[in-house]
Each structure stands twice: as structure tokens, then as C-alpha cells.
Length: 83
Image 1 (tube, helix red, strand yellow):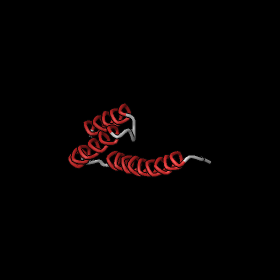
Image 2 (cartoon, rainbow, N blue to C red; image 1 turned 90 degrees about the horizontal axis):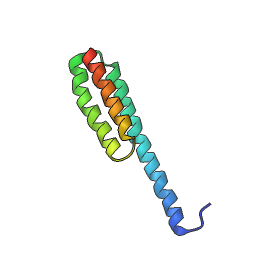
Image 3 (cartoon, rainbow, N blue to C red; image 1 turned 90 degrees about the vertical axis):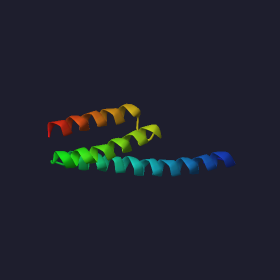
Image 4 (spheres, helix red, strand yellow; image 1 turned 60 degrees about the vertical axis):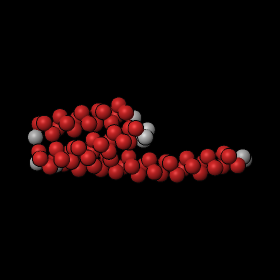
């Protein structure tokens, strides 16, 4: 266990950030799943704008890696174009 006040605080902060990041990452994964389950092109295109924005924000805040966000957006765009 940590002995310094600052390291105890750092552990507390890291735990809070971990929970917050996990929540946002899970929300994004669910949104991607919902988009992949959509079979109507118009609905999927409308949803893609929101999901892509969400992925960009998460990449900007380092919740997910920028390349992962880019790869997901690319795959989703291909999926929508195939509909």
C-alpha cells in the first residue's frame, strides 16, 4: 500500500478515471454494435454520424487509441456503403 499522501490521492484519481473511461468505452462499443445490427441504410447513415463523432472524442481524450477509432470508422463506413 502507498505511504505518501500524494500517491494515495493518485491511486484514488486513477480509479475514478478508470471507471469513467470504462463507461465511455463500453457505451461506444454498444453504439458500434447497434450500428452493425442496423439493416436500413438511412438509419445506419444517421447513426454513423453520431458514432463516428463519439469515437473521435474518445480518441481525443485517449480513452481509445486514435488508430482504433480510425479503423472502426472505416469498417463502419464500408458496412454502410454495402447496405
